[in-house]
Length: 338
Ligand SMILES: Cc1ncc(COP(=O)(O)O)c(C=O)c1O
Image (cartoon, rainbow, N blue to C red; front, side, top):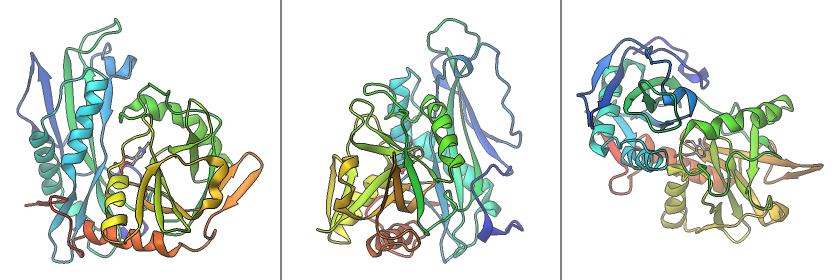
């Protein structure tokens, strides 16, 4: 195991030993291979550079108590990447190839997977980019698929301690745009609003629906959920948010394991009073409790600005218990790296 201060890791790039790379040309994928080189050499005309023809994924590898390593629902990331590819006219990476690449990268970088109990994980970043000679606005003829990884800790600095968020006046995506695809352009659009939020000491911003600006969409890097007084787990439904794998996992766990009513629906920004607790959820964010939300001059506190609420904590325990192999997972959710 690498000599790292695992408990104090944040979320930033650390070079690990191996990454996977495969090339798509003439209608087919090359055999993927592992490499130690962490640089890509691209043609200056690459459509990924000019027109944002690229998509990516994010998932984690978890060290279990017995030393084995889990991936959490990697097939779902593979399928979501295929949907992103459809939106940007890129070739699919087959699900088996995607999952195999993730396994190879984790296995080759096994020493970078944090010990059980530290809370740290190995974050995997699959990336697909349009490359090759091009200048007009049309899809690339060649592609690179790569998967690299970095050991990470908490994404928002509080971890399970609540942090505050601010409603942005900007949109990260258009109503019929690319919000549901995990493509770089959405994140480029979120950099300025995110910067404004950080300048004011908020963890990140919350986006409202781009058509009416009345409903919560999501956080720049995670989905939103709220818990009502009537024990409902509510999370926004919108065609312009990222279909979060964590969110869908929590909808299932809330209902089947915690006995909550799980609802995907509208979350009006002027009706935050209905929630006793709120949080941001995602692979990187895991479950990050939201202390309060600033909306214009109003600051709305949910459960507490300093303590995580009991339902959020229970959801966190259930989700992370499954990911780290301590709690039995629903069928097919865990893939062992062997
Ligand atoms: C914009 C956005 N929303 C939501 C999520 C959460 O999605 P997931 O749970 O699949 O990681 C992410 C992170 O991937 C994200 O970048």
